Length: 182
Image (tube, rainbow, N blue to C red; front, side):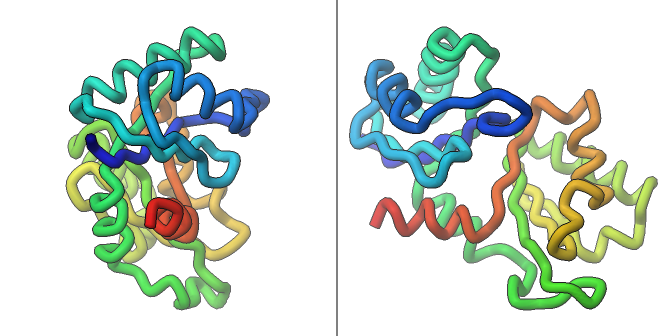
């Protein structure tokens, strides 16, 4: 059995509401075990005997059929999430532009999505590159608290070509996800 975390894109924002007990029931009905959620933002811990890709496909189908939308799930193992948190290049206690910083990890569907986002950031807002970097299929970025949606990288990620190919979590959330499986 593999210990996975699924990060569901775009729920409990923009009018798409899913109660976490309903999500747990759906994931369990799709064959996953030891299912639990962390916070109400689509962070699903589960175990499965399936490969990552097979588990993702099975759960995306089940969630989509149950809740009526094309589900996008980004799946990592629990150890991978712990490594991603540890590998974050930014000091989360740091200030940015004179304000406390929020630090994020954006899971992308492929490393080329992360590279494309950084290339667009370099072209549109090169000053923001000092607080954005990629590691494989994950973007790390930091922004002053209260400015997340106005951040140049957030705007690039919200664009039509990249919007469905990523999901973002605050590093504090990722720490809670890892702690929940200990």
